[in-house]
Image 1 (cartoon, rainbow, N blue to C red):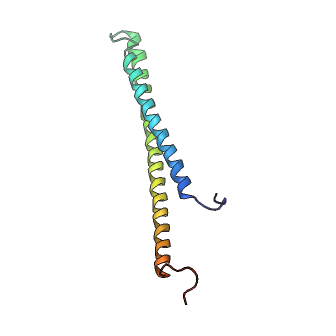
Image 2 (cartoon, one colour):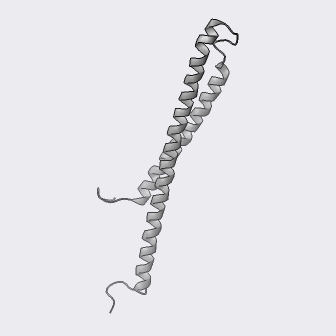
Amino acid sequence: MPSSFEASANDVLDASKVLHNFTTYINELVQRFDDGVNETITWFGTDDDEFAKKAGPPYLETVKITRKTVLAITDALTALANGTIKDANEYINSQDDVLASIKKGNDGRSGPRG
């Protein structure tokens, strides 16, 4: 287990996968939200009466803003997860390159060169 001052790339990758799974769940939630809205989109009526005029536009605007906000949050979390995965993989690749270079420089031997 790494100390509190070390980064474990594998732990970062695992956490990023959890975050990515969470964003997938949120996207599914948005789909269920859309399905529910589509079933009740005209609850306020479709006629040109006073209630439809008063209730419809605020409801539709609230639906639009809610959906847009949730999708923006999901996009931000997805970008964070993808960026973190990319950074962790670059760290792992760099570490592997350095270790391979050290091994090659020592011709596979450990200890000081003589």
